[in-house]
Amino acid sequence: MPPAVTLMQTEPAEFAPLLRMSGISKSFPGVKALESVDFAVGAGEIHAFLGENGAGKSTLLKILSGAQAPDTGTISLDGKATVFATPQDAQRAGIVTIYQEFTLAPDMSIAENVFVGRELGSRFFVNHGLMEEETRKISRRIGLDREPSTRVRDLAVAEQQMVEIARALSMKSRIIVMDEPTSALSRSEVEKLFTIVRGLKAEGISTIFVTHRLEEVFEICDRYTVLRDGRNAGAGRVPETSIEGIIRMMVGRDVGLLAHRQGSFTQSEVALEVKGLNRKRKATDASAIELHDVSFKVHKGEILGLAGLVGAGRTESARAIFGADPLDSGEVIVGGTPARIASPSDAIAQGIGLVPEDRKQQALFLGLAIRTNLSMAAHDHISGWGPFISAARETALVEDYRRKLNIRMTSGEQLVGNLSGGNQQKVVLARWLALRPNVLIVDEPTRGIDVGAKVEVHNLLIEMAREGIAVIVISSELPEVLSLADRIVTMREGRVTGNVPGPGATQEQLMTLMTMSAPKAA
Image (cartoon, rainbow, N blue to C red):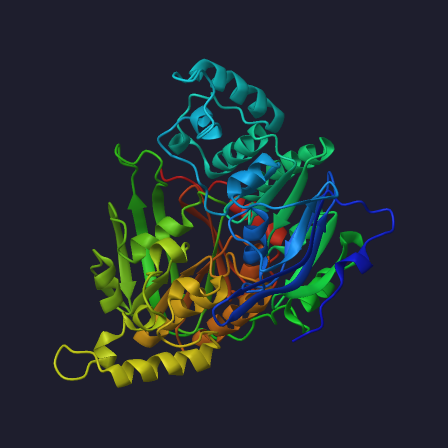
């Protein structure tokens, strides 16, 4: 285990923290989650809190929020020792956490969500007018241009995040913890969020910014703290370090940026072709993204990048190909033969796999074992007598992919929900590898996973392509698309706007294609 870094040694002499956590340790059965961790945040500071999945970030933040108690260590606020026995204690002290998965009630209004559990009014009656008035004042501070009576389900993702921030401000927050706040935002929405965070800083409000997008650290953060294996691995001022330096602190070794895949693919047989996919918006689903004449092909052993801004129709195209959403018209051709795909089971029978964007909601059964999650698509390969699963074959399958994909787990019986994000993603990929697909579609394959796991997933996708699998990668991160893809298809508003070779493509070229309209059919 690496030696601990003493945080106080990295602080300038004049640094007077608003929050200081000293010597925090926490153990769970069989796991030392935190060991003598120090963490300090100044007033009006944007502080990056970094580390690989499983480094201990979530545990420390749960202790800060009052959701868990430390085994040892102290917390001080304004130089005074304090104890947060419950989340309410932390909130009363001005520490509020905005989680990656929002905690809003979709059928309640903005104002009701902002003041939920703390409704304004008399002892017996809620004063909705007063709540809306106060919500309107807070909304003006952060640029949320929506009526407080608007239902949350009618808001865009970025607007829902602003409601979470408004709720935090309504609690008179002094420190706001933001957990992966940009993971589901477009670039323009990220810029708006950063404007809000800088505005909070100007008001003296501190932000603890948890992210795996290291370029954002250098764009908005003042100082950083890195955890590795439950211990301090580094801390300091952001301008005095580099992305490479932070990566070394996070993983304990040099992780080079992914070597480009470009140039390794040679033209081969077409594995999948889609022609003229169309899907109209239904009255019952007014927010759905329409598809208009979507057509492209991917060859065996090719990595095809599918790029576009949020709402471009990339995920909708993938779900339509996989049979998860119905099409109004269009054709899916697998291996040169038209295929009728009306459901995911039809797609699986055709050798098509899909790793969805939201692995927790759409891919994994978090309350079931790794063994069950990994093998469920490969029962035909591990059946013993009749319809019964061979436990020996299933165990061998899990062990084989644990070794191949370097899945960090205690055993196949471990609950998949207890794995880090990167290892959960590997389990989903292993599931489809066990099925031996001809075509694999991966939607945001590295969202919410750390830099070390990201490189491992990238290399795994490259290895799949080398074995002849046609891989379609959907990603909002243009550097990821440019690193992986042999060819790149761009989309906007449900239409294909470009089809360019990966070698030589640039972010500027792709952004131009992603932001211009494709010619509409007459």
